[in-house]
Image 1 (tube, rainbow, N blue to C red):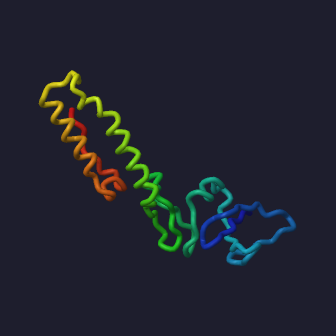
Image 2: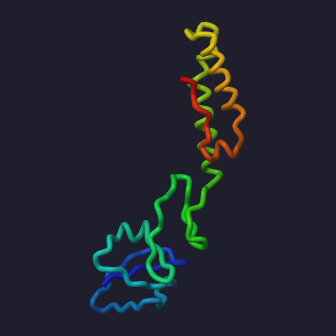
Image 3: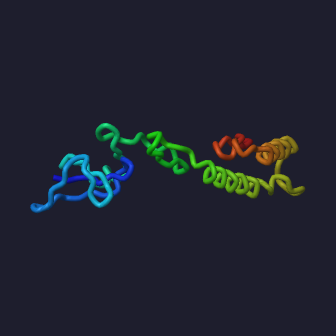
Length: 141
């Protein structure tokens, strides 16, 4: 039989119970609460995706890298600081990659030069909310 040791209902450790070890569901061991897990459960899956709330629950898929699991609300929460930092980096990349479109010797029509200028202006005007939520303007074609 295997048990998961929980900290605030999050799985922190999985143990295989030896012959002379006895664990009981809901009892505290080493400052953690023990709950049995099915013998056929994949340990990595349990560690990464399961939590305890009136029985075993499976977390929904993580929306993106910028989300962390919040046990009190049992939901994914956006790490706005990390998402904003990534958005600013992406904005800078797009501005650097399109700077050539505004050079006097760029091999573009006047119409295309203006489209790229408008796009770059839209990039520069993005709010923190736009950057955090990855709401970038479409590039000219």
